[in-house]
Length: 118
Length: 107
Image 1 (cartoon, rainbow over the protein chains, first blue to last red):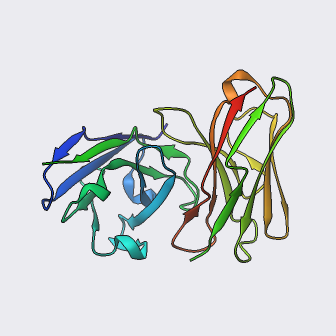
Image 2: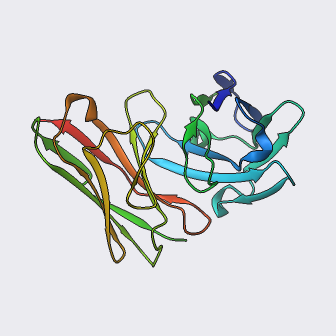
């Protein structure tokens, strides 16, 4: 069974960056497109982007193009989301998610809460 | 970007009642639609994919349908464990987009 384990909660200062990890177990990461989704407190789901760990190709939602950077390390079966120039608007829970088709999200990480505050 | 307009935003229903949630796509997405359930403090769970296919382990009281660019999620007999927020998601083209969510509560 595929499981996604995300890194722990982060409290970060405005203007800085943070890098979140998502480790895949139960299968090889190159079998999946790895997606990341943002959820602000009390709000809906927002797709950030996805990476294909086989060739490191990425796609991003327009609003996250200068905010988010997706990378993957096939040796550790881990995908990463780096968020830069953080503001209060980035305070949210970030999920990694994937599935066999690459289009639907069968598997989800537990989510990581990022709080941006001085 | 493809917009997904979900309705209603909130819904109150009784146990054993039939519940229907709809999602309207801003353009043709074929059957590239999924439904998710999210409970408080938890990650979303896939319920339906391909507009009508039930995901593994999902009770058969959940079903999905399509009429043109309108998609529906039906819960045939509402149970206590069905309470939560439901989202549709289009997977036709990037950026993948979600509906705004429907909060389902018990009456």
